[in-house]
Length: 114
Figure 1 (cartoon, rainbow, N blue to C red):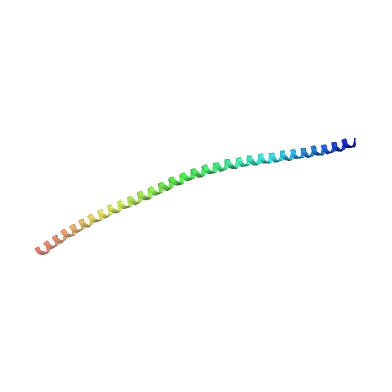
Figure 2 (tube, one colour; figure 1 turned 180 degrees about the vertical axis):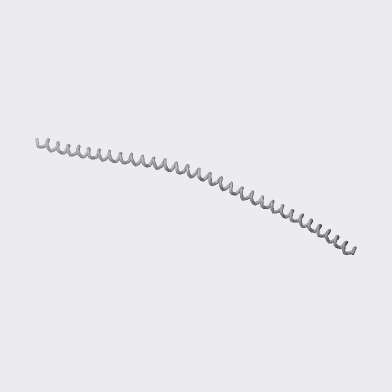
């Protein structure tokens, strides 16, 4: 009977060890499950951030294109306005020259008539 008692206590220790291993295994699996859930949460956050970055990237691109178009349009308008002012000043100088020429002739005729 002494052998049976010794075997029984050894089996009890083995069963107790197996129970502890099962408990540790359950804890490990629970921790892995929580880690996987956190990882999935982080992945969802990253996807949201990537979508937001892509959206902002598109908006920045649109703003850059708009700014480039506005800059080019402004330069074209400035060029056209400069051309118009040059033409107007040329015409003004021609008219001023004609007016001064006529005034000179009138003065010359008046001086000769005296």
